[in-house]
Image (cartoon, rainbow, N blue to C red; front, side):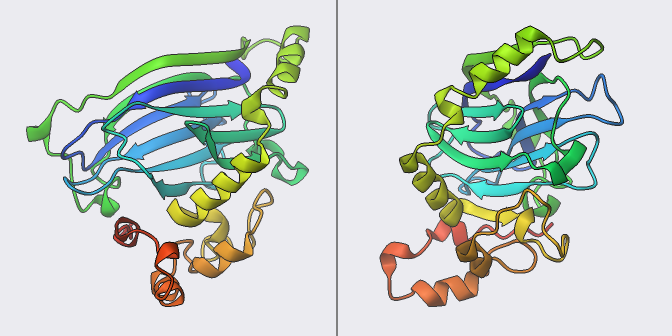
Length: 268
């Protein structure tokens, strides 16, 4: 297990019909801390043939599963055609999810988050499983084992962090040094160009965010930084207001989201 770290792999997802399938690349300590576990997730959600893969990121701290912090997105490429690098950076002060060299989500630790920010050592996992009851359009489309096996390929695994025994004292000199090193690596220091790319990604490809789900969280959780552009785009449920966005950009073709994005409206 690792007390903070950089976790990364190049991943190629299954193709054809993948509805109901979830491919997860994540860190967790649920085997050790069953009721107070921490977790950081990339979860890729399969789809029917001809429809794009979607994915979500999420985090839990100290068993805070009742306060989910998920965001959902589509991709600007077909993840079943080639390998792409997916990276989770977890330090004492922030969490950054990245795809290839583009950061897509940054969570800065705040005092108000308290124990909701993951703080205990975690291990890295990769799984593929049947989530027919929710993964594709709220469970409308199930896994069809006629298309099995569902093969995910992973390569170039990176595990860089302080190896730690969760039962022992965590603040060892070695881990302090590793924490300082993690603060200096390039994944941790988002350049202006990368920040612009992240903003564009979130404006175009994010189709749900808990920060904008005012029905679920009338007051956004403390780590949320509300973007006024996204606030106008999303409904109270945290999903895009497609009708409003389409009307606004109907005369500016270069700004209209792709037809694939319009089609992705979850039913869960």
